[in-house]
Length: 271
Ligand code: HPA
Image (cartoon, rainbow, N blue to C red; front, side, top):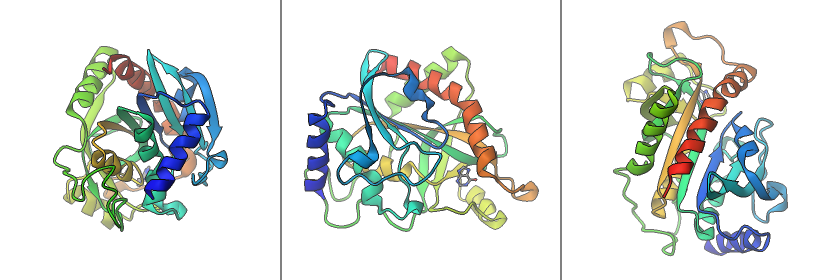
C-alpha cells in the first residue's frame, strides 16, 4: 500500500502539484468552492493511477491545485465512499497522498442528516467528535509504520486550533455554526426510524456516510483536520418524510455559500 501511495504522490508532483499546504475535501453537492481557487493544475480522478473513480453523479471527481487566500490548496471535488464498493484503503488514499505531498492542514465537508432536534435544514455543524459505525477501518491490515503508529490515539480527532478558527470565522461572518457529534454509517440506504432513534440515543447529532475514514488516516499521520457538516435533511423518527437525493442536493446547494465563506476565512487564518 505504501508503494502505491508514494507512486501516486510522485505522479502528482510531476504534474506540478509541488507544494500544497492545505487539503480540502468537498462533499455531496458542495463542489462549487473550487471556483474560488486560482487553479494551477486540474486532474480528473480517472487520469490518476490507482485512484478510484467517483461513481456518484453528485460528485465531480476532480483534483484541483491552486492558490486560495494566500495558501496553496489541494482540493478534492468529490470523494470516495464505502457504499461505492471501494475498500476504506481506497477511500482514504487521496488523504495519505496529500500528506506525502506536504499538506499540513485538512478541511473536510459533508452532507449529513440532522438527528439533534434543535438543528434545521441548511444549518452547519462543526464536528467536535465522531462515532464510527462502519463495518471496517482504513487502518486494518499491516500498519504502515512510515505513516503512523499501530494504535493511533483518537482522544482529540478534530484539531482544537482549526476548530477555534472555524468558530471565530463563524462569529465574524455571523454564520450559525453548531458543534456536535457525527455518526458514520456505510449506506447507501438512509436510516430507518428505529435506527435514527438509536443514533440519537448513542449521542449522535448528525449522521452521514463519509468523512470519518479520512479523519482516521489523518489522525494516524498526525495531520490536523477539521470537518463541517451541512444538514441536508432532518431525521426525526416521529415525523419522518422520505428523503430524496434531489432535495438533499438542493439543500446542500443553498447552504454551500455559507460553507465557502467559512472555509475561505479559516484558510486565510491558517498558519
Ligand atoms: N443519513 C445518512 N447520510 C446522509 C443523510 C442521512 O439522513 N443525509 C445526508 N447524508
